[in-house]
Length: 343
Ligand code: NAD
Ligand code: TDX
Image (cartoon, rainbow, N blue to C red; front, side, top):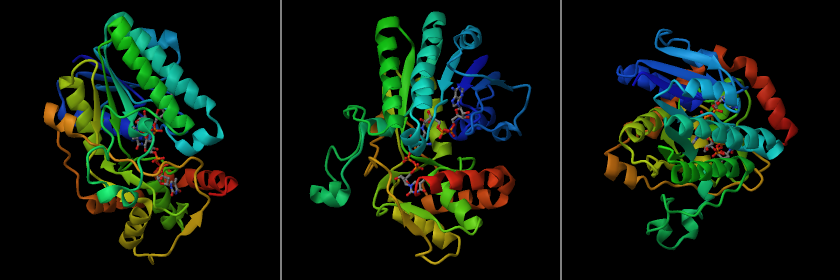
């Protein structure tokens, strides 16, 4: 592969994927990162990479002229760029509509025109939520208790509905314009370089800053955690071996309630188990996500490597403790915005 475009490659998961490709796939000669560097993008996430192999183009995926020029010269596009935070989408949905829907449209138009392979990064949130296991017969061990590629789309927030819209555009472009595309819907990622607005890094950096962690509502809501390195290896498998037109769900069987995750962070950071505040719940807060990734495992032979959550969390805590410079300047602004919202 001579030229791989990674949109959103200066963000959390996109930059992890760029590192993964540089480290494990020397056959990729050149990676072009197309990133607007919004509040969530950070050049530092790519700072240690070889400049002869990785090039950062600062630009907007909605800029049709720029996108056309870059894609005319590409072998494949992996599309991570998005507005990604649910809480922000509940305050101002417009950037989500613009980037997640119009941006995806702009990219697939160009990929269809030049017959360039496209992989679309999406989320499990397009399927809405599942009931808590305690409210299911047999505590949810039966069939249909996790999301599958056949689950109905029923997103809850402006963020997840904009991602759902982009998935549907990709599917239509495959069918009507012969776009060579695959889609993956992944569960909640954690690891180094995640923006401190998100749950796990927010609580770690709260504790490091002497602020009490903040739990929305009762804390019973469940997320299915996957280490971002495992997300990257899954995306690579799908890009190379995935069947055009197919959707693959990525997950590592990591269901945990928010309260459980917070209590583990507190334990690992040597704080009392009740050192946190319950704050206002998120509007429309999804109850539970859970991924059935058997199609990806059975058809493409993928397996996650980083399945020890406590160890992964410990490593993530150490990273934030050792990289204060990366997040310190942003902390007061992020917390001021949450405080305005009662969170
Ligand atoms: P992030 O917010 O950390 O990074 C997004 C990146 O996209 C940033 O670098 C930002 O500058 C860039 N970007 C935003 N708008 C742009 C535009 N108009 N043009 C070009 N670049 C733009 O997000 P993330 O958590 O790394 O998520 C990456 C992708 O993975 C998203 O598509 C998201 O929906 C998906 N996803 C995330 C998770 C998760 O747990 N974080 C789980 C499943 C799927
Ligand atoms: O301070 C907080 N307290 C809290 O209890 C924050 C920021 C969050 N929460 C809760 C809300 C969620 O139940 O923690 C859970 C995780 O919240 P987020 O980190 O905001 O993630 P979530 O809304 O689950 O979405 C994430 O996973 C799916 C990503 O942000 C999305 O981009 C991805 O699609």
